[in-house]
View 1 (cartoon, rainbow, N blue to C red):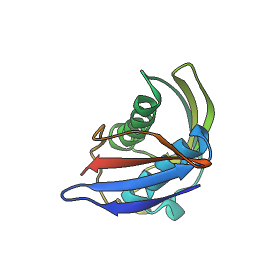
View 2: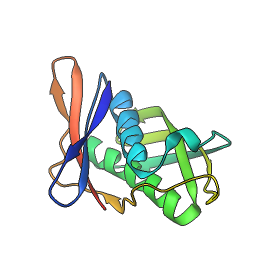
View 3: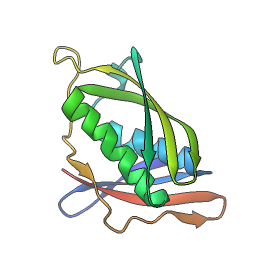
View 4: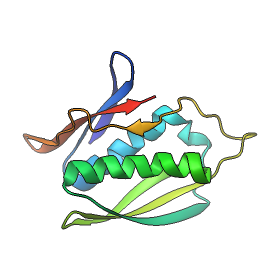
Length: 137
């Protein structure tokens, strides 16, 4: 289970892996969040429960990541931790823990505009699932 930031020509990306979809989705969110802001400065003061519907697993993953970006940009909610509560039948139930952005406390490191569908494919490798995600910055 984990992630690493990868080099791309104009944007930013991550390579993510996990033993199952739950781990993969949580690590993808953790990886993206670590690019956007310092997670250590975020407290788990608030929670948001969201549901996402998708056409497939890749769509669910990208939709989750874009929802986290939307919450940061539109509602000023910074996510510290993502807990996947359920994945089935192209539906995702998620608990997001974090707090409202405070310019005196939080610093945005990289302004990610969107998680893209560019070459997105969740692959099975040995005992892990793996994918690469490119972000529009």
